Length: 563
Image (cartoon, rainbow, N blue to C red; front, side, top):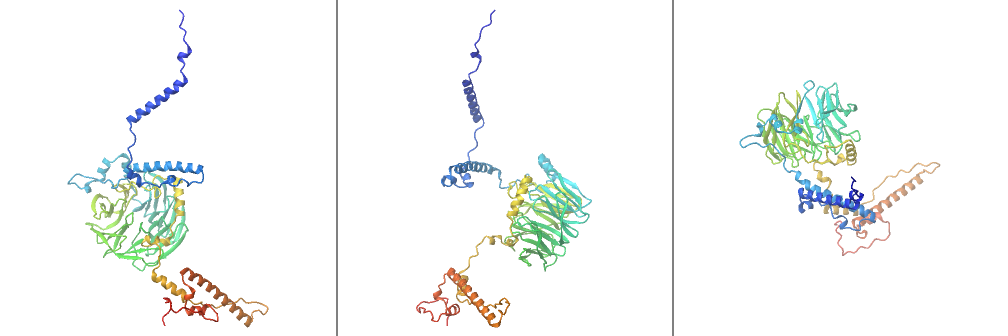
């Protein structure tokens, strides 16, 4: 039986038909995808106006010099418009109010413990709660870095460590073999400053001692101004030191006349340092040896003071078990006062969202409502030993607490700011980003001369008043040539006789007089003063003419002295 003969054309596909079929299938799949997943939600036009970056090439079509640059600018504008839409869509994630704990009616949030919070938290949040048993070298002082990822611990008996507390990766650890009083981060995570028993030392991220600043002797408190590259220290004698980290030299040493200071903190609003002397709070700048402002906050000695992260509020606590809240921009105005029932506040901290943490003996009390002007109890956490220091972690719902037994990381819902500025403090920065940020901050360094009580005065224009202008004109009119005492150079070969020396002195006086008159004429022309209306005294000093200048008598000269 013969097999049927088949043509090869029946089994071979037509190339043109194959491409058309593939294109049809692609369009059908796209249409089905659009029906199943509709397009993005349209953006509100009012919201797009908020992120308008300008008209671009549509308003200035001749902005580019050639066609190639015009194409490049238009391509960049397309990317800018796309980023504008993405930013407007992402605004829904920027919540105005932080999420705090909400309880049933009749219940209080102070009854919620850390165990209850961890039971309702996710896995990532649970990893942020931990404790370090460090009872051999305590109590500890600590500080979070500005990005909220790194932590520095300094024990009173010499233990020093820095690590990434989110990943629990140790960066550096050493034993200084002497007492440590305070620790502070410098411009980045590669260097820290430690106040030791005698002097202040600076260590890198490998534990190497880079510098020993012996001018900073017996330092008990440290603080750092990142925008000015200034490291400040408070000594046991009450002296205030300023060190320029970028130049490596001491700017000024202030010796206050007030009683010895027990606490120190800097204002994020204007960079002014506030120190506590008994019940008095003094504010200092590196430009003066005297305080620029003083404020009586308590009748008893102050135990702790701090600013909020924006520098709007100043919180002070005293041994009379009272906590006062002051308006930092309007000194002397007290906003609220609290009374602690049991013990004195030894340390306190303010979060980015306005939560206030107070260390009272063995308890940590957290209040909310600082920005609303009414502090109410929010959370309460007891410890086994006395609390040494409390501090909120930036951009995280975490509160760090140290005591004699070690370090504890507590979960405080609603404490951290969720919307961070990558140019200010980027929690997800890498090594390259940190290096570029350091160079950028060094180029944009603010001189310490600009630290004032009101930073807005730096941007103001010094406009002279009308009286000052009139006084300046009067000074120019009646100004005389100042006298000089010329001292000619001694010459050899009999050229320094009395007659020749007197002649050379006369020449110097004449040259000085001529130059001064020329400068005075230019100053008068700039002030709009006519030389014809000058007084007789000026003409007598600046001219040696034989004939007097005739002046009109019917013109009133407002600058002329009355007889």
